Image 1 (cartoon, rainbow, N blue to C red):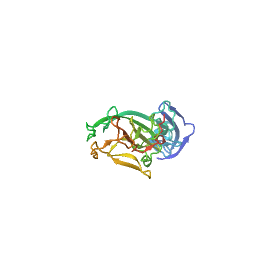
Image 2: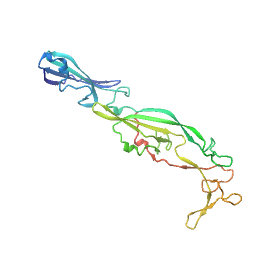
Image 3: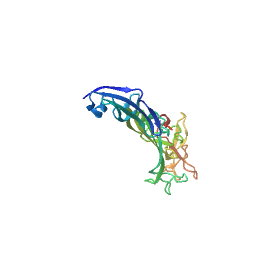
Image 4: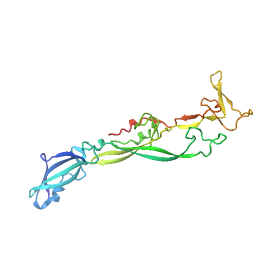
Length: 285
């Protein structure tokens, strides 16, 4: 019970594509020594593709079916192996690999509870003597979350440490610089036949007023000028009785005590590093 030879048929190589992907077939003849050897011996012959094996000319096409299409003689079987690449496509199946499939983009809203320091009119939230509340008042924030998932040839965790937690330095996804924060992306290794790739998911959080930290401008001293060396000079702020104040006074954003009746001034601090997200996330359409 043995196989004499296995030959590939040049004439049995149809191929095509449809709405769900691409396919190709290859035909082989297997010559046995004895009619009693049968179909199982023929299918197990060396040189016949196995299910899950890649096409010899296209690693993305995977063998899905191997069968005997007919017996040409009592000891010769014709075998056909079918290779396929299936999945979500652009609509006409016209893609060469999973790396050309369009990105999947979804949107949702995320709620977080955070302290607030100003009211709806931009005025500081303080008590009747001008002091902030401790602990501060908290409120729900509703932020837009944008998720982009697509297949990539590689995934470099070390590279993404330079992007995780940063805000966008340039417009991204239709949102101006400073409004988008990147969360840690994930990469899941996939395999299609002999070819490997990564299913990468990026998550971005959009906040309408950006991600800068704000602090009410106030303190115990004010700027009164510069000395002969050009260094700033400060003086202690005093109350109406000429005594140093015991609580910080509001400042005008330029180091001086805020004039009575003027709105409070907030100082904005860029605490998060920035990066151009367009360099690493390029959604395919």
